[in-house]
Length: 218
Image (cartoon, rainbow, N blue to C red; front, side, top):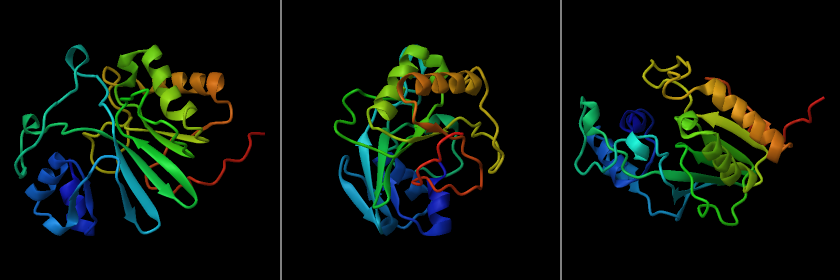
């Protein structure tokens, strides 16, 4: 939602869906900074390669629907009501580097056919709304993104209340996503399926060397 502001402050490239491009255009981001991603195609950024893979959004809307479904088809200038925003499609982001590979899964959606023969070192695991989908769903989600990829480190993301000011990190409301329940589930899945996986809670403003193999527990 703030991609336009970030791109204008940093001159960073914007890579995403047509809806993402329309958000950036509405913020006045120059067109040469915007790239509409071709799904499953690699994009080089220095020593990194970024690939956006089609991925379903977590079905956390009314009766298992996708919240805010649809696309943004014209430049979205601010301010706008919540009803103006649309999902616009979701991705699993695969970030490759000579030192390792990271999967960023922002939404707790998954497909058993999404990651054939893909290995990863680190998974940034979106857990927003995961508690509402049930433990059985969450276990399949873990197996698809962590067990199947052979990752050694997992960082839960999208657990915070993103209505708060920048830098203020607090869990989202329990009726939306109970992080305590989710944390218990993730530890249980790790202990059952992937004993060597390390779970880390990211801290705001603290850099992390994500490709360093974690030290064995004492």
